[in-house]
Figure 1 (cartoon, rainbow, N blue to C red):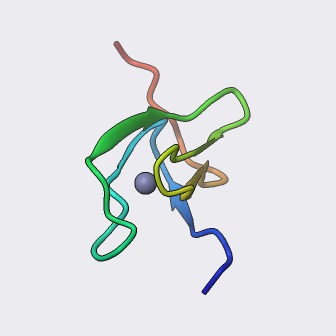
Figure 2 (figure 1 turned 90 degrees about the vertical axis):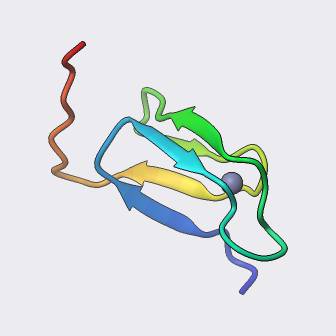
Amino acid sequence: MSAPAKTEVETMKVHCDGGKGATGHPRVYLNLGNDNKVDCPYCGHQFVLKSGAKVSDAH
Ligand SMILES: [Zn+2]
């Protein structure tokens, strides 16, 4: 598959390690931006906030 992978998440903080195989990379932690999405700089995997997700802003 050549289309960029995309994952819906329910938190503003995600991590990516590229999964198993050729796209694997050291685990990195990413924060979703103001537009509620972020692309992994290593493998290009896109994380988007699931619509309706209740984001805890505690801390
Ligand atoms: Zn990645």
